[in-house]
Image: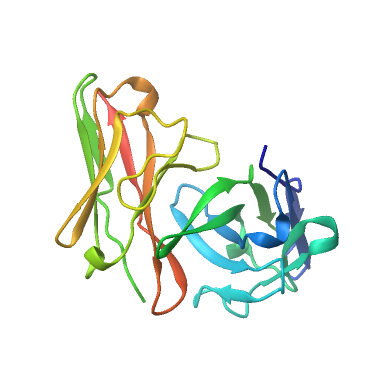
Length: 121
Length: 108
């Protein structure tokens, strides 16, 4: 069974750093890109970016480029999303999701349970 | 950047058919995928590649596309279908993923 298990909720202060994780199991971890999706309270889904666990290649949303860093450790089947200096506006639920290539397109066919990040002084 | 437009809300009576639209420039050249998100839960894929259904998704869920609009159709709606629905495409020209703004389906 394919599973993506994310790290637990975090409460941080502005300016602090943070790294959240997404561990894949039940499939060949390096064979599928892992995407990150942000959802601010009461708002819609927003694509953050995507990382290839095989070679650590990344793509970022233009609106978040430079604000976050994605990475992956293939040896432990885990993808990461990190911030060097959090802002209150980073408060959101963050989902990881496995991307599947089909025909001429990509979509997310498995999702993690989400990690709630709260940034408050 | 590419934009997908969805109505903020759709209401439907139980047993009736709900149709949720997703508009985008030249969407006919892209494959559209749909996700259902129940309150407090992660999204679930309900339609991929415009009209294909993942295993485990009821046949009541279908997808179509015409002109610059894709649609998610839910027949024989019941209270359990009340959720937020999002369309998504992969934009080949930018290699970016794009979500629509989401539609809240209310079952009256």
